[in-house]
Length: 380
Image (cartoon, rainbow, N blue to C red):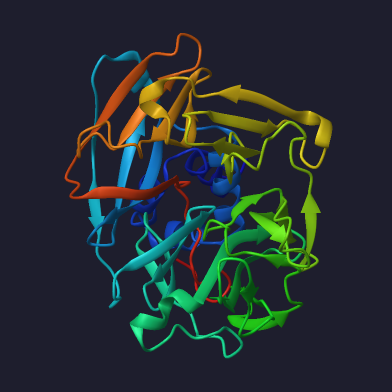
């Protein structure tokens, strides 16, 4: 094995921050470890062989700022779980409205729907150009209820490109019994990181008013819970799926046993699998996991039965039998924004987060990677 191959082999197994220190050894090391090929090797190693800690990014309210933290996977062996949050300060934004993540890159959207891509490890950041086809956020805040935008961020392996999708539309409720749209078209736009440009795609055939803002990326597609746009009288939900390769929509089957008339449905991702969460006012919080992507018969069901976690949102698995949850019911204290739930014995451990102010609005896992928001235009 040649010296360069040895360096690549060793560094591909290191955390992203440690690779950054190796780059400082010499110009040749910096050049070698900044090549797109090495960055992909390192990313694949990171995803294939999980590290000793899980990195999280979360949005705090009422200040609408981002924080990062890490949880060691051995924490679930301790009685007390403590994490330390770091505030992310960047750009000149007007408060964070939403986030999405893919391969260590984080999409950040502010309250006026300006967008940035950043890598929280390298702190490389890129402001995205605006799209002329995306509906503009209303200048008058009193009209913000007429504006709706859902979005998603993922990787298209066919074109080796990261893509952002926005679905924007106006929605006006004329009465309790009838809905009329000022603009019937749902503007769908796709941003290519490789080309640094937006383009318009076909309008969405779904009603996204009830969709969670950020779509879930699984298996080369983005997913939202939505309704068929043609039938407002029914409002039967479907999983609206946007294929990043084909850049078009299709439907994913919901579990047949879900009582959607009594439950609120949200799409999630756990352990690399598509998950549907259903909970209602009676405290039922069920999860359906699609064991084999795209196969309707592969949905398997389990419930979050602990009454203190009725409104909690799943974040990720820690180990084989522990699930990290974002607490939304107000049971935990401000510092205890997350909880670790044992699926086997139904026990609960609170996660205390220091350095965090306010309440946690949303959170997600982030892969520690070296991927640059400029990707093909600039080596990091």
